[in-house]
Length: 97
Image 1 (cartoon, rainbow, N blue to C red):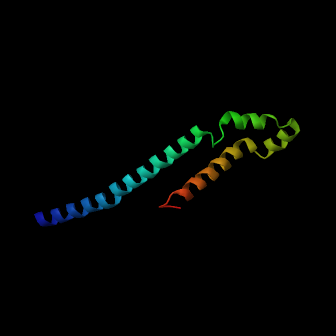
Image 2: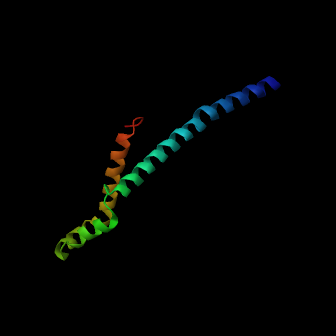
Image 3: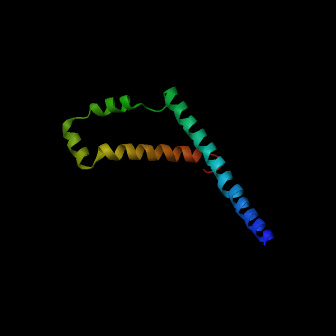
């Protein structure tokens, strides 16, 4: 009876160590590298700041803004930009891209 419980504990412990903890460490390392990479790029001036994007969109005439509001440009542009940036970063990660 004790041997069966020990065997079951060994299986559960092996599963936790192999799949859960190892994956947690790998994904935490990927998150840490990606967040550091983004903060470095934004600090060096390669990525545009929110002020510069707002200033460039502030020069758009009101007649054009009417059609941009019709197509929900104000909510769609951040989604597209973040998706493109995420795709760029994921393709640069050696294990995933």
